[in-house]
Image (cartoon, rainbow, N blue to C red; front, side):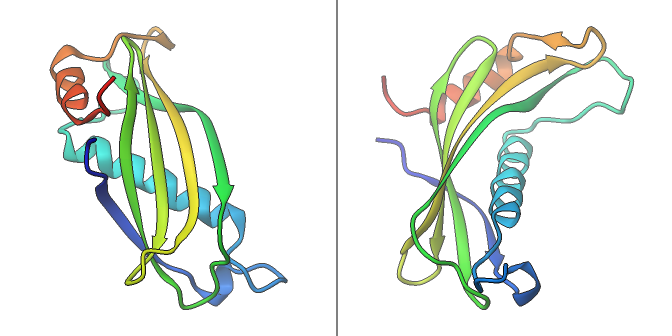
Length: 140
């Protein structure tokens, strides 16, 4: 089984918490979204300038599950795994865990599809990038 990659860390701030004193859902989404950007950058993806030719990953589906309370002052890490690699898409599992004890706070399954910036349609994953992603994927 592929080891999860440490992609980023967060600190839950009081201003990010809702009226119940828990980290609000929009901030979990931001943590997972940031982790995906970091993943692609580490693999060498260069995002073309707006209006330029190129292919980029775009999030088409995201499903979050909340496992434990995250309160102000919590420091947490986002780890990720590549679950599946298709010809045009990649499916990830991301987990937000408390620093130190590793308590699961939330998880996310995200599907990203490659998108041709000029044609405005889905596109095949560039082969060089796809081969790097496949190396990180869970065994079939």
